[in-house]
Length: 434
Image (cartoon, rainbow, N blue to C red; front, side, top):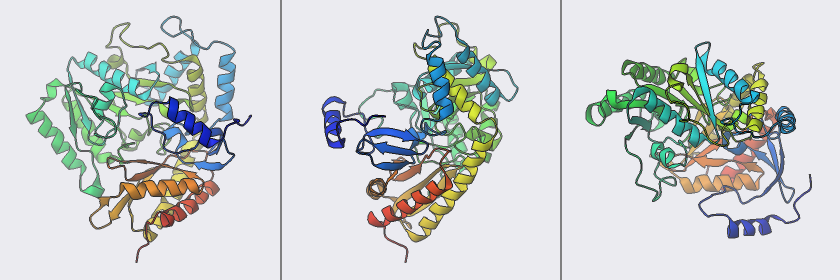
């Protein structure tokens, strides 16, 4: 692959002049090529990519099976638009996801382009099925950057800015966070309080939840909380929407994160790693619920693009023998162990948390007060990049460093990343425990 003639400074100058400032880029590098869990910039420098397109590349950069599937599809049909003429990859992908999510119960799917579109359509479907307007979401949630997505998102900055007024009928409640004293029981009590003071349960169409919050800080909902929430929603005829956009497709060691709790949501939103880097999203749910909108109510010009469907089918095929799920669990154990060792040495790591290979460390100024330290988290990220490791931040206070390395990462690459991270913590001024 030819290397671009321009080096990084010139390309970043062109970026500044031509790309809207509202589109942020976490690292001042320009990618030239990538493979597996590694990425090279235009200057030829190698990085371990523990961002993975923000959870998009669970099967790694340029997986041969994905490349082959897209290449074959490219020579057949690229985009007739499913709303004009159907094509087999869309149908086959719906069949595959219905099987994975439904577990034998009748399910149906619809495909879109972005995660935010999937969330918006899940809300539309829920309102159509129930005839109710209200939606309950969680503080710290991230559900996209469209106006409804931002309204459902439980963080003020940088997502809400001055973009309001926002759609009505949305209420936020606390998400379980044991590190900061929020239990599952407290979250359920807050939901009951909403029913008593803001929206009667018979006016609520859906509760939408990330089984593991992504941008909110990699908080994993306790299984007993998810089971209680499922029971409560069923009791009131409220649909439960599981946003699996970041946590799905093996990231947590199961195909979907809600499976850790043994529950079955009414609707599941998928995107990101569904197609190994190709833009596609979907809503998968109980057939009776999915069929609530009448013809023409769902869709989108590029939704379920044929190339992306082919890529998604290849990704699902890679999970069939279970080895990637086992790899997510074993790599997760290795990374968690390494992060816990770093926590013992560096007092700024307040907590190591997550599920499977979806892990994060919360950076605090004082382990006693747990005061968030976003500036230190950013310095750690910058020093890690200097050492050849790409990571990004998350959390309501932007003080959480998250790890989303591809599931094809090798154990030696995990060890290399931990070594870089150890040096980055020291160089960033994190200090050591006495």
